[in-house]
Length: 116
Image (cartoon, rainbow, N blue to C red; front, top):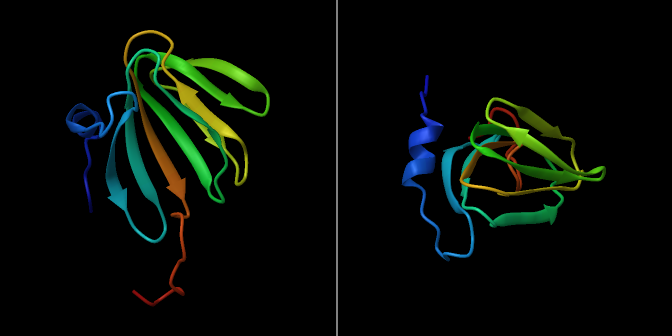
């Protein structure tokens, strides 16, 4: 069993460029990757696509998520699910916006089941 506090991971996350969101990988396996994003007001992750399912859980604040249907405002407690290949992005419109992204299966090549 692994217990993770994504809120603490978000607080400790480092932005390598002050213009970009702070991020930290909180869990990583061949089956799933979880990353926290801490976006300051005005920061964004531009719309992009993933070959995996992406689930965003809003941990703190309010912000905008985007997809093929345009932008929608979301707030703490909401979960947004993007199917494989679906366009997705996020931005902080006011204040801090903290999300936990769970990507499954993990991007990249996966070993065959039973092989570690």
